[in-house]
Length: 77
Image (cartoon, rainbow, N blue to C red; front, side, top):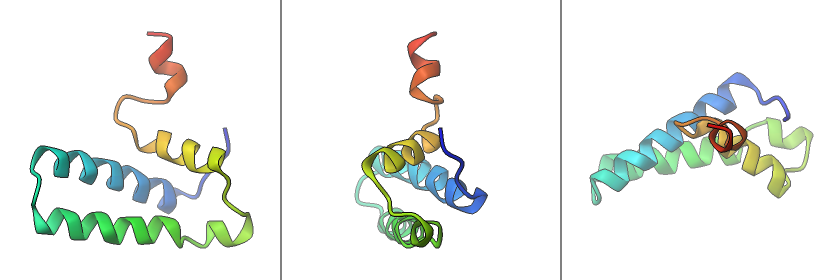
């Protein structure tokens, strides 16, 4: 698994938490706006300027934001 900058990983964790909140409370404008800002922060992060994002990199970053841990840990519980 690759290493992501702390601020990028934190933005992804916040994105995932906000997404879950929005799923529980649909239509909340402040949550939609926050999700949009976090999406922009994640997508345009300087990390992606150094290396071109591929689907595997996006998948690994998304896994960092999941509340129940990486897929490997979930499969072996």
